Length: 490
Image (cartoon, rainbow, N blue to C red):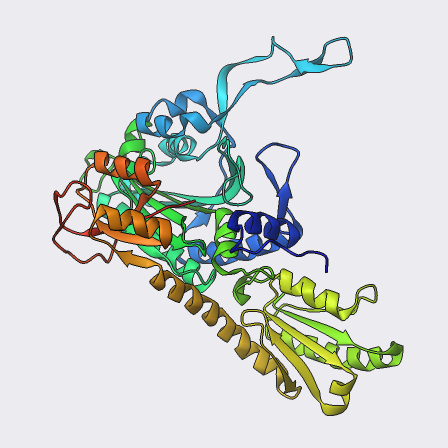
């Protein structure tokens, strides 16, 4: 195949960009900063969606849909929220085009909207304005709603999947009668995200809370899962927010409690996006292409015939059809590639690039011997195996590959997590080793900002399972009760 990609050790950023396009996941569109997700890439996203959607429904949530456009006045009702998103908003000001008489299409200046509309960067405002009509009493609570949607955040520097002006995501928005219920909901959804990341994406994550500086705009507390990519940079893989009563107060959403008292509703919001596609690629893939965990691979098994002449192909096809039927019966997605237009070597390279977990090759000698060649993408190992019981063997192998990919990523993260006790050591580790750096911090936004400006590293989270440990801040020498996790990040 003429689809060689740059080595990730040579230029990680270039490797990533080439891999996304050459593996047919996505491409840049005619609209600056936006992407076209191609069928193969969208198939992976659909598998992510299906798994997450089931998890949401299993935890009592239902899907709904809210408008793409949000009146500008809604944003000004929650001050910190508008401040957090103001620089990223796309604004609709007119509703009509016209011909200028010279064959040019121009905006009709007379068709100006009375109130500008914001293309949703996130939906808290429109949803809480809606909830005001849904909630009167404690009997109306909780509301556990999720929406699958697209959002627009006008990014200046974009990268496919990781940061685009428009992206796909889900956003959960729930309403509760007590703060305790809302906090439990936010924590529950964090667990759902961590479960999905580790058991589907095969990406180990650190669960934690964000510092006030890094919180979602309008949140009281932001919970997050942080993952480590192979270049030693962190990636925020999902967030869950306890919003307190901020949005209920901004949109006057009150309810009558069991005791007959009028109070504001408590809220959460939580979301993951197509950024998870970036995590999937960067956490596992290699210089030969994608390495997909079997649970998310659009094609889990590919069968390639190696034959001389039509007669031999016919016999191999009979064997392959039987294996395809057995695998499908087990719920395994399988493709038999008998294209005559491409040679087996081309096909091998193509499926390696696309990250197909298991490849089966059957040739003339295999017909005689009752064997097949079995190759796995994660380790690149291959062996000749007996065809009897092959479907069962592949079924077990897919489970083994899923676990192996996770364990490899976990070992990498453990090797790239370093405790430091001085600012000099902190900077040295960031520059020479990368990864997560565990260090004491004095808890002030000023110190956090200084570290960010001087090193480009941010506090990724304060881990939830953190152990208390008295120490001193690496920068100011002030007392610190625990370590926090720093990294340079996407």
